[in-house]
Every structure is written in C-alpha cells, then in structure tokens.
Image 1 (spheres, rainbow, N blue to C red):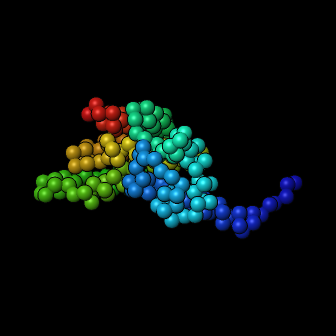
Image 2 (image 1 turned 90 degrees about the vertical axis):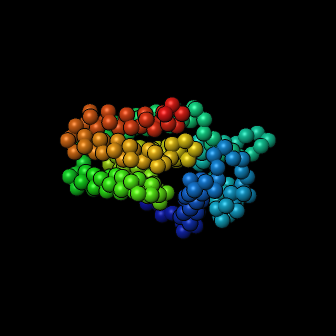
Image 3 (image 1 turned 180 degrees about the vertical axis):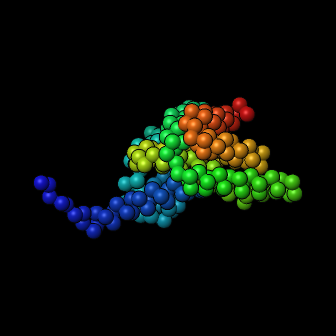
Length: 232
C-alpha cells in the first residue's frame, strides 16, 4: 500500500503562484493588454502581471507547451500570432471536439439545461432586435451576447465531464479568442444571426436528435472559420 504524501505548504504556495501567473497572463492576453504576435520580455511580463520573476520563469514552459508563446532566437519571446495555419488548425480542433460533444449532449442533457440555454438565447435575440430597431445594438449588449456565445460552446464541451478534453479545449479557446479579436468577434452585423444559429443547435438538442445537432453546430463553426479567413 502506497504511503500518502502530503505536499509541504511551500509547494502548495508555489503551485498556487504558478496558477495565478497563468490566469493573469491569459486575462491580460484576452483583454488585449498583450497582443498576438507581440515580442515581450520576462521583465515586461512581471510589470504587466504584477507577479515575481520566479513565477514568470516557471510559467514560460507551460505557455510554450500550449503554443501561446514561442522563443525566437536573438529576439526573445513572441506571443502566438494569428495566421492562416492557426485559424485552420484551431477551427478544425473545434469541429472534432464540439460536433461529437453536442451529439452526446443531445442524448443526455437535462430538460432544465436545455430550457436555460434556450431562455438566454431567446432573450438576447429579442433584446438585439428591439435595440436594432431603435438606436442600434450597443457594444455592451454585444459583449453580453459574446459571453452567451462562449458559454454555450463551453457548456457543450464541459457536459462530457472529461477534464482532459476540457483542458485541451480551454487552451484552444484562448487561441480562438485571439483570432476573434482580429477577425470574428461578434459585432452588430453578426450578433443576431449567431444567436439564431445557436438556437438551431439548441432546437436539435431539445429534439434529442444528435445528427441534426452535430450538423447545425458544424455549419455554425464553419461559418465562424470562414469569417476569420475572410470568405464572408
């Protein structure tokens, strides 16, 4: 029988600091304090995150392994930049995971979960249509819709209850959000069509039709990919 090893308080504190550094980095990355393609030094990361140099040094191998930064000889660290290969790879990854996950969700989702997803989307569509008819859809309303967009996709993946898949998807979603900042983030033109595409997926889940749910989500993801590439 193996002995139980209790981690020393300093080990736990060190681990917590690494996680804090990672969370701070990704938060600043997604808020655009750090830009895709930007060259950045460890000292600059210390200033941006407010965390000690030791934590930043321990963070870098993880960021490199996840493809969020790369080391360029004689130039330093570069934040991953958005190019055609990143767009194709990131969206292909989404297709493989999400289309299978939503098929399972269609068979297993509770009535309460489906009702909550539908209510959020119906409400957002109604609010956007009303706003569009008056003064236009405000940036704050678009930001709310963007959160609903991300939450739906995260719900589809997390419903699998598979930590390995959820972690891999989370890293890919960071790259997707970098792409969206430049090409496909929701805007006044696409917010209502996007919410309605989501409702087609939700309708298929409610009908317990995995094939229809998977196909509706596939079309939705391919549409976002085409906007990122510039085909729409």
